[in-house]
Amino acid sequence: MACENCNCSNMYNENIFMPKEAVIVRAEMATATEKHFTLKWADDSPNYFEPGQFVEASLFGYGEIPIGFASSPTRTKTFDLIIRVVGRVSGALHKLDKGDTMLLRGPLGKGFPMDKLRGQNILVVAGGIGLCPTRSLIQYIMDRREEFKQFNLFYGARSADEQLFLDDLANWRKSDDVNYHETVDRTSENWRGNVGVITTLFQKTPISQDTRVIICGPPIMYKFVLIELDKLGIPHENVYVDLERRMKCGIGKCGHCQINDKYVCTDGPVFQYSQIEKLEEAF
Image (cartoon, rainbow, N blue to C red; front, side, top):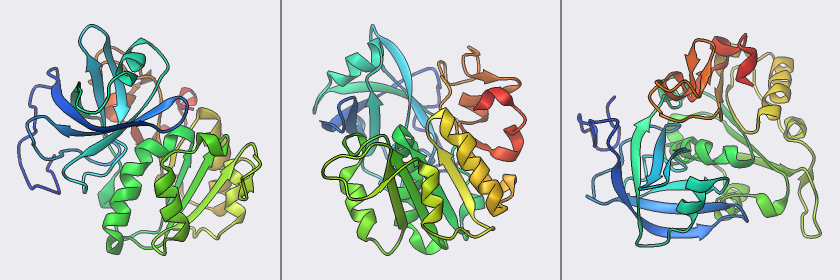
């Protein structure tokens, strides 16, 4: 795998079992449960990952958890991770602040197939925390906008208080480079946008049949988004799903993320829908 940004030929860490130290340059709560970390490698090495890949984040004595990159490798000096507090490891990581370090193992997995997306119409459908891994792709497209055709982005959250990347959302609303639509499940006093599940956004703008679609969100969302795509006649081979299934080792050895003969951590986490549509456990 070659890095598109630095043209280097060697991975920053050839031993996939050995974590590397990263320094936190910014840390802030994004929502009540998600913390946004901006980091750089302690040895000042350049970013080396593809949109859609992930790392195993850890602290000594606590263990490790898989976290998708929430920024594009086109942003070469720093990178972003969003960590939701759900357990012991994530709770320990949430206590870290600017100047602290965490250990990261990776990059791991197969990301978005950029060679198949360039020169195409793109639709990203992100629900909830699914905006985090897809943000790596969104930023990539925005940074290299001339390489892509029409770019549509649908984002759904349970409420306005749970929306992520508020500065990004404000920029996307007024940008000519992306046709952005958003919705929330529950309205609030200050919300003036769409209310309803994310599939209601398909009524907001036409989506061409030759569009390449990327989906990431809660498991229940996939089923209904895929129904809408079938109505539009979009071929399954043009749909890519980023699965949130539990990963542990990141290298296909422990079996925590196995779906029949597929391992999410090595065969994915990004899959072409036509390759897994018959795997009922995938969604």
